[in-house]
Image 1 (cartoon, protein in one colour):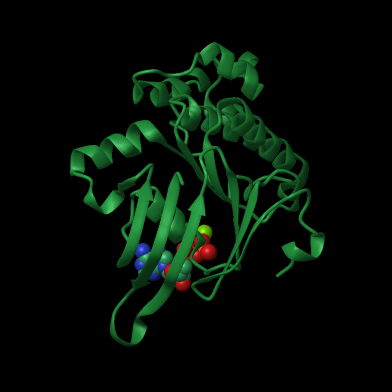
Image 2 (cartoon, protein in one colour):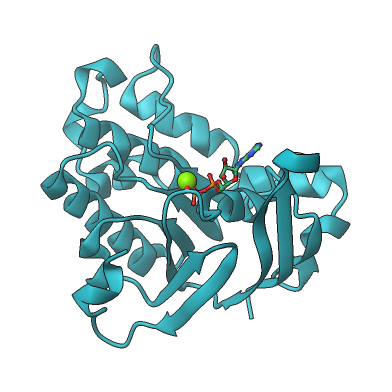
Length: 232
Ligand code: ADP
Ligand code: MG
């Protein structure tokens, strides 16, 4: 199994204000899988992504990626993991305002030894004709396309997406999710995505539901998720 999450626990704060956010999670994700993480606000979805992304650490438990335990990695190796093998897409696009679309993507390419072809990527992303524009000359959806490009130009093993369509309207959101699905199918990146958008039901290979710090459901999405499953 490519990604193994074993008994992960995480709490924040201390004393009376201590919150146990993750109370012992076990989850296995295969290489190339498109896994969607659902759960109410505050259920620890972002915390889990941050632990997988190596920007936060668990209090207990293990995270094993391709046979290697993240906690045992040297600082150098962890840095290589974050820079070369991991892509991250957030709700806010966080583009560099004084760089063009193309240059923002090239920043991601700089982190890799074998980046994808930027021209090809700009076409796939549907922003080839906007490549010379600055972020503030783009719509939200176009900015997110650019941010996706920056995250995947290094062809990461794992792509983490934390509510990537949270700031977009419904139709634009669907287009962005479709684009991420295309990326998953074309490049085979393993994806772990938090989203509330119900368009995901046609795309995800696996659906995991978090609640009260535990995984309440974890199933392979054979065809479609019944709409009721997405209600909280
Ligand atoms: P979700 O993404 O599911 O909405 P989060 O993982 O962001 O949930 O947060 C889960 C809980 O952990 C929330 O109660 C949040 O306030 C708390 N939390 C998250 N990060 C921190 C932090 N760095 N310090 C203190 N509390 C935090
Ligand atoms: Mg969150």
